[in-house]
Image (tube, one colour):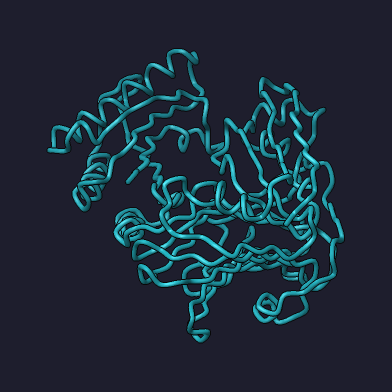
Length: 404
């Protein structure tokens, strides 16, 4: 049991270029059992969880909370680090944050890395699922980015699922084509659609952050130099059968430059395989436009065209994309969708807000006209407050969040 009673809450009460920068807190006071049962597991989770064990440095595991405006990130969850979890807290003012912890290894991680592992943090527990699939959400961050990509210091983590049959052990921390999720396998050149660069925090350069508010917010909040997008781990299971999961992370090659995994609160659950299939349907319709899978929701940003300064939809391609949305909604009548309108920053903020709401409503009305029940749809508008790119055209978009 973790007995450390240290609690750190840091609020960066800064305001640079109009960005209110605040926001990462970490708490190490809970036991590993409480972290899994009351934070990581869904509140309505009916999978029986038992035999929770943690092996590693006592400050390499904790609970985090994060509040951000310009970046889509997990807001609360469990963090496991190869160093001190408090070193994850920004600003990103050094490229080489390191904390040596316990010089322990993990055989499973060393096998994947094909080399020695160090400073391992390992969380394990048994569970009995009530449905035919299990799932949870996470992202990975590391100081190894960008300098030590492909330099034999490939920090690694794994989610190892097994049952009574040891030959059935498998790692759920994989991309398509069974590629392990590591620094070398997700970065600015390899599988870059899954990678987010975090730049060094520069509080003096106001113009830099005015033109890149998402980048400024990220650099002020997290110390790590790079991240994966929010990813999803899932597997088919047999209801009522006992399984074991091991969640582990370690340094590889040396004990320098920390890495961490962030597990979303409430995301560990058993569910119907139909929920997991929905992501596959979405990718078939939209490919790489499927931004992320958040367990019970899938987010897609589409550049629907409207007449200038108007909410009237125009262009054959716009209706082609909306009809694909219809196809997804017709796949599963239990799926609901949140329709969020976004604009670029041309014009007055209040006008942009109104325009984004009107455009989202017009999209919703189109779906209703095609037979989708109004009870399955909600709409909202955010104006220019949530840009996703320096390219203004990409910020003029409609976001569809499909929720089961």
